[in-house]
Length: 540
Image 1 (cartoon, one colour):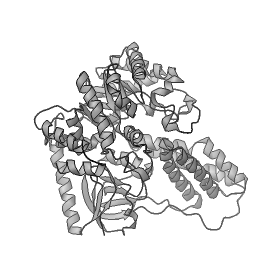
Image 2 (image 1 turned 120 degrees about the horizontal axis):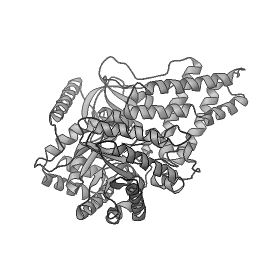
Image 3 (image 1 turned 90 degrees about the vertical axis):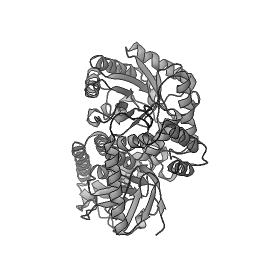
Image 4 (image 1 turned 45 degrees about the vertical axis):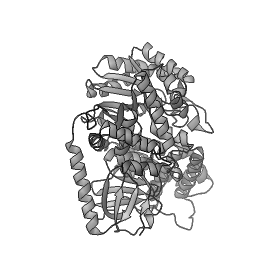
């Protein structure tokens, strides 16, 4: 079997027999006559799905809990219930009505792209669970081969990913991109993962495979080789874990390693602070913005857990592409380029000012070093206006995220108005490469090793160095051990990632001098494409 190559989205190397997820439940070929209680059955099925996902969300923490809670909300959405009821009124049985209604929603979401395209995959999971309940058949879940194994799938739902246990060595999916739920949750669990691997489902169950989550290479090996690779991977992890303390290069140059978190439960002692505190969790499922006092309490819990460490809080990152009902935003034909991030303050300014008030109150009551940044900033004027609001709220340190090429190209002008910037590599890749980050077919364009994206990162780092202001990275690319060295060589001052990524990144930095890092950065920037850049740095 020839080697397969996908997109490595969670670093590490391991090996074991591959086993694939089972197929979803299939509707019988013959459509039965709808019974008189079909609407009640459909309602009960969707309620079961919503409640089971909500219950599952309480058994996990952090990102997995947020994702499952969001999926439960989708199952309980009145719009879906109405669409199903309309089809039942036309004579469709409950299972068929749910399949039709969700299929139509999926097509709409895919056409919208961005955040909605990712939700289309979640809808398929809701459909399968509801249909399985209605047909009284088991819902296919994770395989249970009785030995540690490599999990193969077309894609994984949030519920599937949340249920992964220690028997899963690595994940390889046919679809997905660097910001899919599979990628995000694999990184949060420290599992090697490769997505957009076209031939993975053609591999027979039980075939020993090696999986390299850094390079994206998936290869057939012998059973003995698989054991040796797995043991080597465990040894690498043990070696990385033995290196403790602050992030620094081999010659002692400081590169602080921070955490991306959604709440106090995600905070690990291993990090030097928080480089991205996502605040969206507090706003999900609301018909109105949470009161200032409630926000203050939630922020204070994390600030207190952080102690005197730095916490970089991102203001609400929502909008037309990540809809929250209480914002009352109109539908847009291209939501990824519409009212999102800081732009929501143009139509709902009170949401931002109340959030800043809550953050200020919480910061005053704790010892945390609180920095605040806004997402989706495109101009120096927007940055200056946001910084003014932050300072008016009584907070000392104001910054913005660099996620669009315009902001990267004008980083010098933006940094003149703020105290720091943080680069979001996920969106920066999407907007630079004109590739929807949720479209697995374009995963190669969304590779953070793309030289054009790296050139923009280097441009921002140079502006920060010239103005003596911090430039961090909080996108998922910061957790790639090889890229971490490249970023350090460019002059990036902090790297923020999920907790499992800290040990390998710390170890990678500790094995390179700053001169090494600068040389690796030059290799990456001079490459003609992403695979060449990765290969040059890996061999450098």
